[in-house]
Image 1 (cartoon, rainbow, N blue to C red):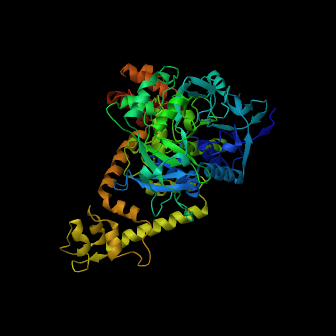
Image 2 (image 1 turned 90 degrees about the vertical axis):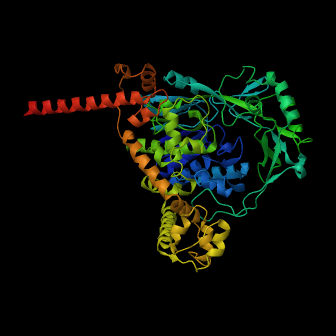
Image 3 (image 1 turned 60 degrees about the vertical axis):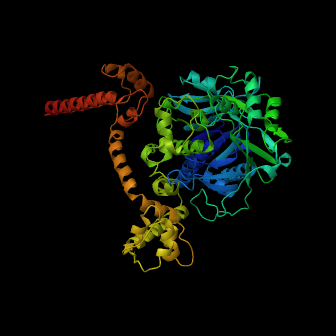
Length: 634
């Protein structure tokens, strides 16, 4: 007997859970979100920041599909600035420092306002399975809730343990209960599980920091935003500050490595390579005599400051000495110690590109539970899992994004294809198509898809179409408008090392690498009264047209492999010409397409050729069998 019934149950109220619940509810499904603590919905337990290279792309893609992380960030930022602004458009990335409390409050209020969504505090200890598929969940205190689909987004809570020095306690985050029991249930159902580790740095009382000697890191004077929606608030910005480690800091850490549970062998989970602890930095980069750290405010209503770059699990007394060794922090008060957290996770090769378990229909997962790190990675998986949970309940085909369409597609393809043994972090270098997959054009790539599945409402879609009309109109104007040597451009072009010896179109002028759009806007603007709002998109498309076309051709070639389906349930041990490692990896990952098989580590081009021969022989055999059957019927 069930105490209640929902179409979709989402376990967890973090960034993955919020996006999953938002997607399922807005697609018309009755949805329940279960959280260990309803007061921490949308919490930012580590750095209260969104964005950065690769991560901004994910956040904007979630927004383009109809997700919520972009709106929440724009509504609660303390500071916004564009990173890598002097570099190419493929690696430029927006980053916002968020108000930690306001972000969580905003997110909870938003979730409470959603039709079809119910929030409930509770801890899941078992999945209810009927006819080899998900039929509900059982809570710690005995309630049984029926459903058609479950999205597990438990973050670091499954059998979570936190470490400070050699002291340890069960916790999903400091001060919060871990989720006990569900790991055992998943193992009993046949899932393989592993153990990962992440960490967080100490928090400092900002009133005890001497900012006068520290370099200031301000936000951009005119902020850009994460969401493609309009009507974003322009808020007063708070600067961050920079400090650096020194020889005293490094000596303290080296002398106390034996106190670190990670270096003493007490922690067995693997930590994130691209977000290492301060101990890791000192050991792995022993040739460096200093590392940059940032002091980032956590909110307008608190004095707490996040010491970014100083994640550690050393004992509290050592942490205090490390803090006092830093310039500007000689008298700083540490209000919360750093800690490491170790937790269970599900290697994602057990899931499809729709983020549904291959061997348990109706069971989806997203976020750190699948081996990633970061709010943006969690949000991107969450919206895909929520969409597919809703489609599964409706009996419709799954929704999956290819690598060529998005960083979200790249993220999920990497997770379900490659055997990743450490927390995965998105970076622009992960994508082979990064000139096409820019942060500024996420809406072009994904908003029509969000519209087709019911997540993009009329208002958002109208803004999108108006933007595209404006961009196309400006490109057309640049293509048709011709300028002449005596037209007044010379004084602007000379400092750039450019001349105008004959008439050219504005498009031809903008195509020159050293000529920015601002030159055109100053002499031949689209609107004499205000700047053109989509200059970056236009300039990038014009300047990089040749490279963009080349990447499109590359995608067409690659997608041929991704359209070739591999047989489900096939035993690759039957193909003796495959290398032994390839047979093992193919049987473990069970790729859906030839393209996915080619991206598996350990599968060589020669192995792919063997698969192509096998598929062609199989096709011919099936065709011949069809012809024989037709003759028999005649």
